[in-house]
Image 1 (cartoon, one colour):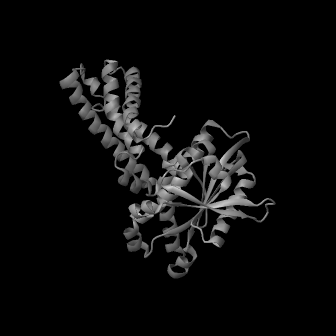
Image 2 (tube, rainbow, N blue to C red):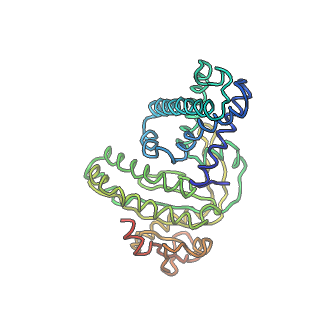
Image 3 (cartoon, rainbow, N blue to C red):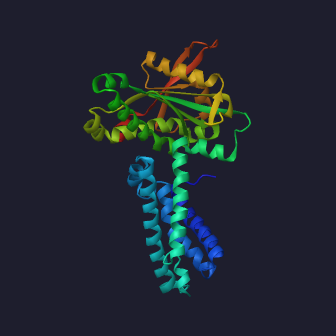
Length: 345
């Protein structure tokens, strides 16, 4: 089950209360009801921060730091939130509920409580960093061993190519081009996360994103991801021009179909996809350049999505023969309605 921002604002205190109950049971800090309330008050801001509902801009900046600085900055932020939350919780429990029966119930006012908070914060931050490095979806699937044995499933693939990157490198050099592409892919991360997709790989100036069929077709999430990314670039156009002298542009191709998904590798584990659908999506991305289409979608995927949201349209471009594929594939150009484009700008 997935909770959106409004739902998670209600779920976060419940999860914090459970953590408080666990702490209270382990360290015997007083009435469990008080421990649950304290846990809810302390844990809620941390969980909202990790879900980008609290300090989202700060979170993105911290995530962009080198790993040692990321660890230090995030642990420091966690401890600050814990100390502030503890102070608020003590006030609430003392003045409203009067659950503060002993000094032990202050939890973080003791050396043990502070060390406990630091240790838990360090572990949580390290786990989140590993998750960021290999991708949230990949991390979770590797952790539970979902693809330890090959699985047949249907997936959606998006090939997103940053156009003009070669010319940018010619003008500004490879180091600046790397910084440029790095920022583009950083900007892509949030729309992909919101659409519940997973960035599988970066190949030069191209990003490969994937969804399970269920997640990708729900409310056309895979298409909304592309246009949310476009809207984000447009909204931050001035910053892009100031930093790099231009606003990134891209082409996108989306397709779906059956694949065999499996873990591969020993020293470097990776989840890989085997099947014609990946190659077909790559060929669609090349076709989008030939047709001069910004976002190209296969009819197979459109059929699975069903009726598009009111702000999106698809224009049938007919059948096209792709290299390495016997049967022609029907494709369409997808775009936002004109009113939506004006509104985004």
